[in-house]
Each structure stands twice: as C-alpha cells, then as structure tokens.
Length: 250
Length: 248
Image (cartoon, rainbow over all chains, first blue to last red; front, top):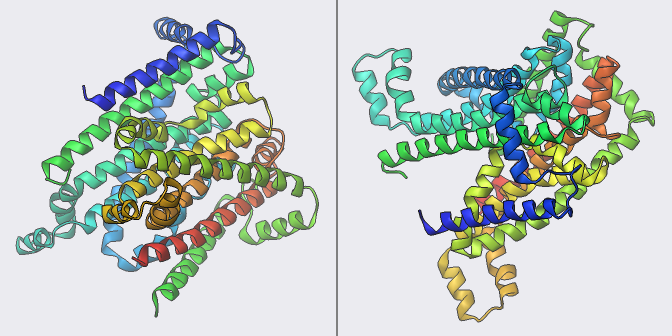
C-alpha cells in the first residue's frame, strides 16, 4: 500500500471513530444519527432478511437499463454527428450548457406525460447520462489517427463497417470515460427521481424512512448506495487507467 | 463570419429546433399533459406580473447565492491548500473524486436531520454539490502553474499571501474559472433538488406542489424559467471561459 493510501485510510477510519464517539457520548443525538457500528449491523440484518431486496433490485435494474440505453444511443448519436458537421455545430451549444440545466426540473413534466411508473425515472437517468457518452465519444472519434481512416478507405470499408471496426475500437478509452460518467449519472438520475416522487426503489425507501424517523432503515440504505456507486466507479476508473496505459498515454 | 457570429447563429438554430420539437410534441400529446410554447410564454408573463411567484423566486435565489458563496470560498481554500502540498493532494484527491460521483441526494436526509427543514439545509445541500468541482479544478490549476513562475516569486521573497495574490491566482485563473462555471451549475442543481425533495418554499417546492395540483401551466412555466436562467448564465460563463483560455 502506498503512503497516501495509508494516510487516507487512517483519516477515514479516524472520521468514523469520531462519529462513533460523538454518537455514543450523546453529543449527536440518536434521532439525528446512529453510531456507525449500528448502521453496519442494521445493514447486514437488512440484507440477510431480504426485506428490501425488491427495492434494491428495482433501483439497480432501472439504473442498468438507463445506462445501457444511454451508452447505445450515445455512441450511435456520436458516430452520426461525427459524419454530419453542421448538425454537430448546431448541437454544440446544447452539449456545452447541458449539465448546467437542472434536468430534475423536467421530472414533474415526465411524470405527467408518462405516468408515475418506471418510465419517467429511466428516461431521467437516460437524459442525464446520454450527453456524457456523446461528448466523450465525439472527443475520442476526433482523435482517431488519420492513417487508420485511410486504411479503411483502402480496404473499401463502408461507413458502418469503418465505424464498427476502426473508429470505435480506436476511440475505446474515451468511450469508457463516457461510460464511467454515465454509470454515475444514471444512478444519480434514478435515485434522485425516486427520492422526489415514486412508488418504490432505494431512493423511495430512504425518503419513506426519513419521513417516519426510521433511522435503522435509512442509514444502512444510504451506506449501501454510497458503497455501490463508489465501488462501480472505482472499478471503471481502474479499467480506464489500464486501457490508457496500454496505449502509452497513462 | 467570425467565430462568435457562427456561435450565435448555431445557438439561434438550436433554439428554433427546440421550439419546433416542443410544438410538435404538444400537437401529439395534447392539452392533458403539455402546453404549447406560446401558451407557456404567456403564462410566464402572467406569473411575473403577479405576486405569487416572487417570494418563491426570492427564496430560491437567496439559498442559491448563499450556497454559491460558501462553495466558492471553501472550494478555493481546499483547492489552494491541496494544490500547494503534493502529499495532501495525493491523500485527499481520491476522496474528493469518489464524493463527486456519488448520488448526493442520498445525503440530503442527513442534512435535514442536522439542520432542520429550512433554508440552511438547502444551502448546505447546494454547497456540497458545488464545492467539489471548484476544489478539484483549483487544485489542478495551482499544481500546473509553471514552476519558473513560482521560483521567480521565491527569488523575490514574496510572502505566502503575495505569492497567491500576484502569481498563483493570475496564472491559474483560466482553470479556476472553469471550476467556478461547473460549480455554479451544480450548486443551482443542488439547491433546486433539495427544494424538490423537502422544503416549504422556493421554486422547487412550487414545482412539486404543482404536480400535486396537476397544474401543468405552472410546471411548464417554472421549468422554462429555470432552464432559460441556467442556460443563459452558463452560456455567458462559457464565453468568458473560452476567452480566458484563448489568451494564453
């Protein structure tokens, strides 16, 4: 383990220990926060009893659908935009300001149009994630070496074949960067939407537990969501780094 | 055509396209769920003339501005501190990056339990959205300042404060500005998200209230106001961002 990693571990453990002490001595009262060891015990009890498995499955599968949709649609859109310069120029200001727009503000509208089911949540996660994929894929396509494109032309490849066999593999690390962001965004979109208004899922359960002062359910779920999103991101970041290093850019 | 003229033309085409899609969607879905662009604009006019929306607009603005100030001050402080010290940066950067990617809405109930249901929970929630990008961009900006500039400062025996004021800050400004731009939008998103989840006033509250009342006019008008505000400010910031980066 490297030195900074040890420091980091010590700081995080110290922080948890501090919370534990503050909770046990009553400086932070029980209504606000439970001591960390209780949260972990509650989490294990919750997972082994399976009482919230349905909510967890719903959230994760919705996030997965939103992510896959965003990845497929995003990559295809990027390939098409790469071919049509004018369309790309027109959409550029949209991409540049997209993440400044509070996409969650559209959620009420989506509920009214699509009804209060899974559809508006998935669409919201998709809307948040897709632009990150498009922007990063375009960035990767711009960096495909020209000699590869010439090789494709020499071999009489059609536009679809060129995209599938030459451009996308060459742009893979950048697509992966987009995918990494898309995972985070689709989770944020789904959970955020569940929080604001929904009929199930982890976000809904947290907000339900919050409204009922049920800290024994709320804190374990929060920890679970943090754990899932941080580990998915760490794995993808590691993979991305390896791809980059293999190309001598890391 | 010059660069900025092309950009303006593209933005105009884009707005036109959005309006056309919106109108087509309205014709398809109908009055039950949507309003046309013209109807929405006229309702925005009615809202702005009346006095129902102003207290909420004011409340959201107040929370947003306070959150933004807090995010900028603490983000810059963290960024400069970590940018200065290599070991501190190596220790804390992964924590910041991990925090950046988590769905922060999950933390809002905790903030509500700590601060209670009021403006301070909203401000805190907006702040934790904006603080990380500002800190990360500032840290990288300070770290990438050309060493010769720092050496020059040391030769001239500048004090720590003078060093930041006359060398580090100007040299790192373009990158810091990018961080502030991203921080601006995320703080706005955070503040609104907090209001939508639980609050008793503000535009986010009004939006959620309108769903309950099935008041489509109000939903569309508020959404339009928010989008136009965010897009306009962010375009202006983006313009200056490009300008700052182009100078060097």
